Length: 391
Image (cartoon, rainbow, N blue to C red; front, side, top):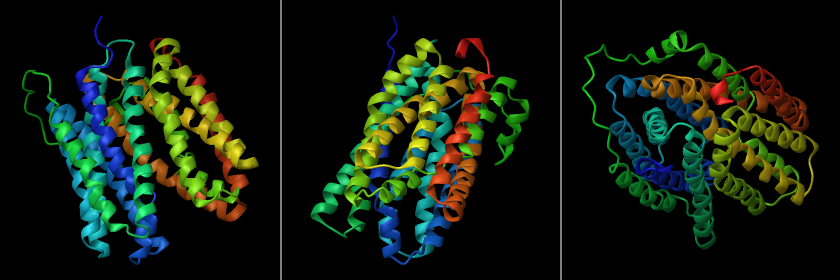
């Protein structure tokens, strides 16, 4: 019997663990740091919007480039290297243009690597094991989201207000990720025939020629992405419920811990009961969490909601990518995932903007109620999506 978690999966998972540790070490302090060097809320929003747009649009481009060249490792290595070097760049200078450049480098790295990395994971999975392979990778990746903020809290407890050194400390796990990525190697295969260069938006044409099953699935996932706003709104609601700053950050760490612990077991469950069923269970948990957030409650109730939110993420994040690889040709895996991820990034920007407007106009109760109801609509849509081997 072949090993379920191969050497390639282990390496990719460790690389993601180190990279996410570095990134999440900075996540809780980034808004505070940017405000301390003179960034307004509007400028922070523009910075994050540009960064996410860069990541989103580049995922499809580099995914198609990876498919055309039939190479994965170089894209993975370059992508993680860019993200690693962006960390100390953020701490070198405080000029707005420099900050925009460094942040864009980080997100460009994510765009370069995402499609190729997920294609490597798909190729490393045996038939019927994609759920656990993607689940294991998400577990390791999200473990970094536990370690990173915890390390940042420990550092800031001893060095309050000293944010700049954190950017250089975060370079250490980034270097480990770079080193581990160079252990990856592409499988030996025939050199592909020469093809025309990939234009930046050519990946969008994949949508027209993609399998109908891919388009039907992606429509449902993208509809959900249009309402799945940033986790910042959950943290704001936790603050509204009376949690202290430390308790709010603790809730975020707790959510990531549940996510990390549950992703692999839920991936194994998905291989047994089907990717679709597991994903729909996750969406049901999401709707329940948002209904609970609309109602509000005390510390214990909010903690329970964050526990369920971790289970939702574990049942959907990796499972969605595994599901996409099931309905696409293996030669187009990176393009398919990159195309979806690109559109998903754009939808995420819209989702957070809409949530912000709803919050401003009607308050948090309406914001969470609308999002929870949208999740139920997506469940109804996906229940009509049938493909025997993935259900």
